[in-house]
Image (cartoon, rainbow, N blue to C red):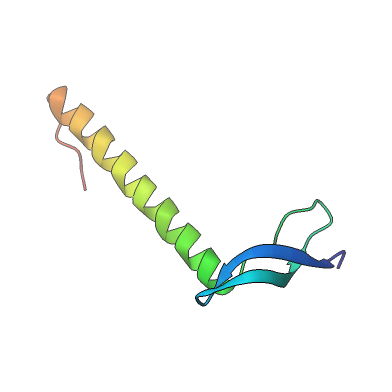
Length: 67
């Protein structure tokens, strides 16, 4: 699986300190479920904003986008 256990400093459940976290072979931190959810919500919001900007550009060009 090439996973490694290491120390991470940060805040979790209103507690700041050092935590044992899993890392992959590239040194990337594996996210907790709540972190993954927050990242996906942020990505979805950014995509919604991008779609809205594109729809505004189409309307400015006289094209009514299909939503």
